[in-house]
Length: 106
Image (cartoon, rainbow, N blue to C red):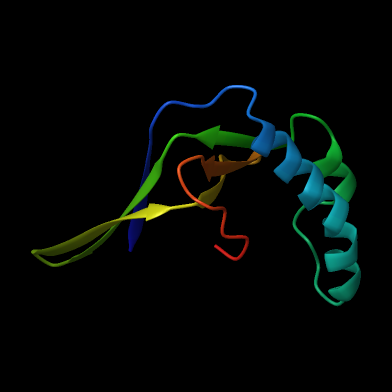
């Protein structure tokens, strides 16, 4: 299974980006406290450091999911309200779609 993400233009200095980042960082300690038995991959202090957790808003986000088996290739494209990505050991990025209501469970 492979996922590819397509975005429209980024909405620079989006209010929802700043509000969502602040809300996640505000609620994360409570979530982590309830899951003390699990070892986290990154610490809260690392995430809270500017530049390590980046939230961006785009006009639209689409995900294309593809499955390839032998000579058979199936794919499906769908819109998404959010996508989380991390490139190697760099910053964690949360991409939000500005064209839809944010689904906090997606």
